[in-house]
Image (cartoon, rainbow, N blue to C red; front, side, top):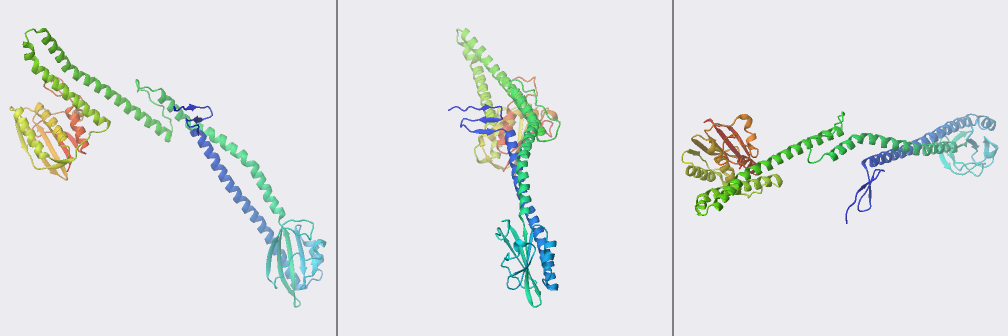
Length: 470
């Protein structure tokens, strides 16, 4: 089943599974609306709860004060004239009774409650009791009431002062506030959603410009760069990172093209030699040319094979890394073998060594290749002497290869590790190398977690130093 992705104008995307995934703008707006909605609901719930408690507390405090005043009045003067005072001084929403010890109503603030007690609470003198009821069928409504009762002693008898305060007004206030909040919430969420959509769109507009510019950049032309906003936020850093990535891609592309061109140039020379030799052999009817050119063709064939192997090695290093064996390697044996080989192949050079036993864990064939490349370079550059050493210092194995040649300028000592770099342009490819030896040496050394560096030699040439962990 093929996967089809379509972009829609509403900011949503359809995938092969039939699911829809919102764009960043949509998700951000939805997240903002949800967060604000949750915060508003929690805040509204807390507000309504606190408001209700505050209003009920206000009613309760007023009832406590009122019942205390009447209880003191009863304790001081009894119930004489109390009914008239209660009718004149009682605030709306309150009902007051004074009960004698038998529970009979002896004074009341209203004719509605002058016969039957409002509560069964009978606190002792100076004690205060509370209760709350939802319905009071004795009176004209069924509102919720907060009842406070306090005992008052007079003339050896304990009277009960009852204050019933309606809390319906307070609850209606809370309900009214809740209604206004319920009406305002959707409007506020719409404002938040629209503002979030516009703000996120404004914030993502530079990202869209970056995306559009990157989409137009092709592999044939990597010189174009994405616009960098004048801000110092994450989007500006993203644009800078994208431009840095494009710089690396452009550099890598240029390096790759140069590598291909150099490789083609290196292969063209032996191929041309082989082609010319074959033409001469074909034109020669005596067969003598074959015997004369056979050695040349074998040499050029070996040169092509070595070049192809070097190119494959570097390609592996660029792709997945060079695979290395992990065995004990005696570096002093490898150096001693190179000294012996160079003495045999270059009798005009003086080859000396200061070899000490050193052992590392690595690939003996690859390490031998590193050493041979460095020794061959030193032999080509030397006037008369090549010197090799091995040592162990601070937990590292050190190999040095020195020559007494003309040396390498300081500004070129890093460049020579690049591929196909030759400082001596006058040297022929037959006498010189392919320009890959130091590159291969560096890649193999890196694969062993080591380094290879170049420095001036005490004899005037160059000292190549390989450092490997022991």
